Image 1 (cartoon, rainbow, N blue to C red):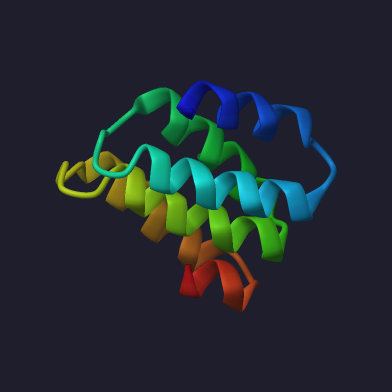
Image 2 (cartoon, rainbow, N blue to C red):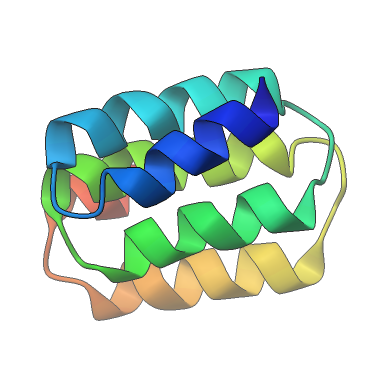
Length: 92
């Protein structure tokens, strides 16, 4: 399921509604795994700075890294939350 959702996320390059759903599905499918490939795909969506897809990507990144205590992930997410102007991304 994770590889399917990653493929769908890549294919939905400009469709933020599909990206939103694929991010949330990927976050749930890979919850607590610390899967670096999934995390990097979600980070790419987050860094596209789209409010709708970015909020889902931020939530999914947290789900994927749940329980890993990854200092790198926390640092990247907090840094980006301070840089973006989108309230949805900050909240995510």
